[in-house]
Image (tube, helix red, strand yellow):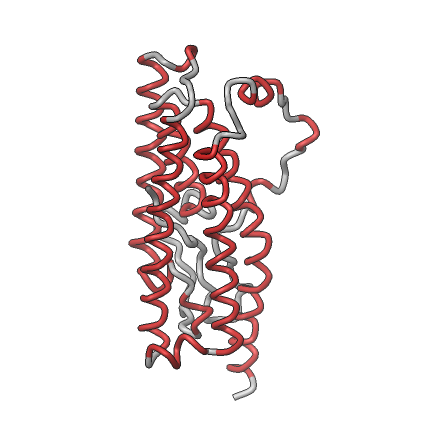
Length: 237
């Protein structure tokens, strides 16, 4: 399914405030106390959350952002991967490949969890199927266009390896949406769940969104600090 790691705009070279990767700034204005949780509560009635496949899918979803954050911060602190692979770029490509493999495993676990759970009758219809296709297509568009705008290094934690971007990315999809990589990936899972009329898939999609939100809150300040130090170093020259 979608590749993820990140989808943030890079810091501008002229001293602008750095742009954190894949953040959830768009959620900052929401009053979660006003969210109607009735539909979500009903979904729980259709899902066996003790099913081993469902639990494995949850663990795989939670593990991925934890893995890339821990490894990337370790690399930023020690440069151990850069030394082991001979250069920061080679190390970044290696980590990016591992992340892609892990995301493939996550998508497989997600799909298997849906197959092992019953469908929701109200979603097992043509309108939900075509809505799912549309959501999946939009999500895929955002993921692919984000990757093309950032490149492999920019997508997969290049700044943690000391490979910093010189200017913020303002082209599509960053021109219309903040954090298109994370939210595009979430939309892909949402569309996939609707296509399969799967309440388990919808709950797992919520887990995906929550895991990305937590990751962004954790990543954002750290990434800002990397670019802040870059700007400080330039001024001191």
